[in-house]
Amino acid sequence: MLLLVVCVALLLDNMLYMVIVPIIPDYIEAMRGGGGAAGPSAPAGGNETGGGGGGNRSLLPARYPPASGGNEDVQIGVLFASKAMLQLLVNPLSGTLIDRVGYEAPLLAGLAVLFLSTATFAFAENYATLFAARSLQGLGSAFADTAGIALIADRYAEEPARSRALGTALACISFGSLAAPPFGGVLYEFAGKRVPFLVLACVCLLDGLLLLALAPPCATGARANMPVGTPIHRLMVDPYVAVVAGALATCNIPLAFLEPTIANWMKESMGASEWEVGLTWLPAFFPHVLGVYVTVRLAAAYPHLQWFYGALGMAIIGASSCLVPACRNFGQVIVPLCGICFGIALVDTALLPTLAFLVDVRHVSVYGSVYAIADISYSVAYALGPIVAGQIVHTMGFVQLNLGMGLANVLYAPVLLFLKNVCQMKPSHSERNILLEEGPKGLYDTIKMEERKGMGKSLRPAGETEENGVDSYRRDLTGVSEEDSSDYEYS
Image (cartoon, rainbow, N blue to C red; front, side):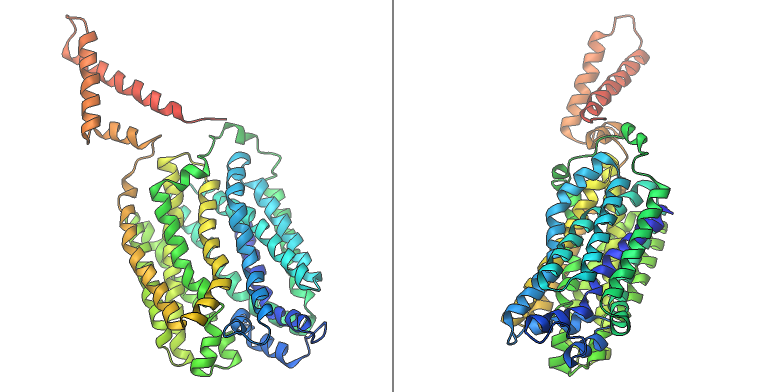
């Protein structure tokens, strides 16, 4: 049931992120002086009908080359990026707070803020209110998304259950992003602009009430016995965590940069119609879910190859990105876009459980901060995409943009070899303890063990047998282990 609550929260967040897309043209028309409610007008109606399956693809192309309203183009980019920007700023604080107070209370707070943001969207009448609602959504997402994913990692502590649960959450994220534009477009067309947001607000309220019934945040007495999580700044400098975070950011750049740019390119290069632009991303949902399913099954059978699944996904993303500019019709462009989403599913499904495993074996099994780092990685891509992508296309070209993104993914894929031996790590308080348990493998540890062994012999009475020397050696190791474990704080 808690997994259901988290999946609904992630679904709502991503639906709210995309459901605004078919409704934006009305506000743009109003800002340009075309009237307060431009719903009946031809431009807005066209965008609604064509943008039902991917409204931002039919809406944002006006950013390049700049149309007559260049200022409005910038405002649209800032509006779409504001959610990720605020999320990027708040995540370091939300991760630390989640580690200290647990997962349920921040998740409930995030749902409350998302409810407020959705209600604000429903009654917004100008750009300033839209911007406030979008930014408020970023604040709620920083708590709801991070706490939700961390809660899944905490409740599903063993593989392959953890990978299956996180894969389910990723499928909900994908479904929310792809289903929101048609959901918003249809309801807006037949019931008005407020109805889509009011429906999402009601679902958000019900999800929060279900969370209150399942795990009241006030009833978290067990939290007092949980260890204090590793500070987020220490996790950021962990080389293994840094490699995973870099992979998550790099693999999402093609999706974040193509969403606001591909529609205009399709219209200019292949004369795509509105319905083709609107349906551009809808088929990609199925390979994304397939990628999640395949990765979960492979991880269950061959868990030591998680790094390989991520590297393979990045290679597929890189190749697919390079193929996009070569497409000449709607049917052809669907193929590389499906490849990009399939690769992203491989990377996310393989590396999100790896983050939890790294925390288990190298730090303390508290997951708020490490998944805040993952959320930061996503936010970097989606904060830059709506603002930077159009400028790159305008100055350098669509082909160069795709080649650069593809090359970045292909070059980063070998970096995941650094994670090859992660599965061989044993749960312990530190890497040093792992070395002591497995025997001396380096010069320093060999010398220190010999010194302890010699100290044990010098303190042993002359009549003691060699067997007692072995016992003393084991006691020495036990003492060292206890000293090393004192570095960890418990509340």
